Length: 454
Image 1 (cartoon, rainbow, N blue to C red):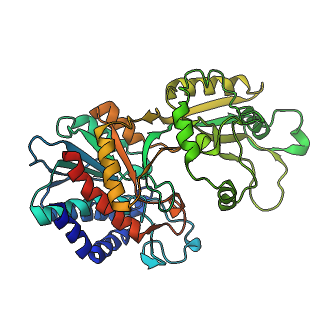
Image 2 (cartoon, rainbow, N blue to C red; image 1 turned 90 degrees about the vertical axis):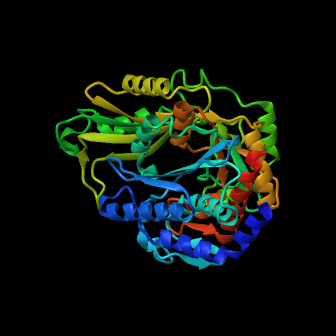
Image 3 (cartoon, helix red, strand yellow; image 1 turned 120 degrees about the horizontal axis):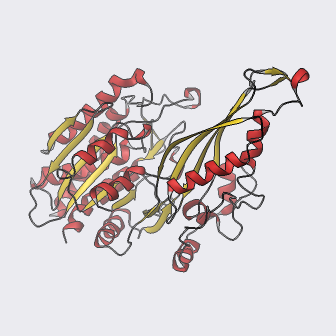
């Protein structure tokens, strides 16, 4: 059976890329209301694709952008896979840094350039095409599938959470499949078995009721910008160790076996530094760079706003300062507990005469999946067949909150199967997806449905 599917994939390679280009031409930027109609148009494109291959398909209206649900459940005594993806994309700014326009897809040097090429239109599309190959060649699938494709991933997935909670029975599945991660490196495919969690907040320190002349008032009152800079400067010591009280109390240590596997992965420190344009790594000295990136907690100031930032000097004491802060969390850490500790730490270090406001924005816990499960085994076999290499098992430093929701609300774990690369410029100008990785990912997906049945 699978040989016919493989033949279909080979025969339709160019058409698949052309259809992906159609989707990439739609500027479905969910963060900008000016693109609302385009986001809906991208959702309708996904709907049409799924409906055309014989799935029961519906457009689910929400308070924001639509969710596309599609299913085929004709495989008796077979597991059910829920395939998640998103059709919305990040804003393309800065436009001037793109070699070609972000919504005019172009293949150059074997790579397809466009906003959303990898994140997540291209990766999500591999699963649609793999299901198409089975349905067109056999009229059925080896397993049951349920697609949930949303249009709000890049803005927090608030309506998706409501949809999942309200439709538990409809969405009953055995495992979720998500391709919104990456391979480890070119030619080294990967399965991501762990994700860091996150907590995010905004801190505002306020002082005088307006900006003041620094000559007349400077030195007599506390400067909110100076104070907030000092407050956040105390979050991490010079060695890279986070100073929030109790921050490490619940951290589940990395297992020795995991550290050994990470150490075996090819990692060129010099190339890494050169790619990032920095002169040295930084962080907890007893951990490797990969361990710090994937499996150790962090605390980062993401943005700092205060005072005058225009051209030339302006001698003021600003009336306020704002810092945006996130902590990436690891297994064992509770986002709510970390948030409370961070708030208390900052408040305790806020100087007299200033007031502090703390806004808790969002959070989710870290996840680690069982690498010995039959679903993981099926994914390994499928990827090895399609990519010609055994996938390595890695963790991911980022957070995918919906994966936590799948476990908490639907009670299922997720196969995180990334076909792209970290160097594909996700969220940056000149985002791209290697065309061969698109085809390999489609083939791996097709083989996965057969492997999950066994």
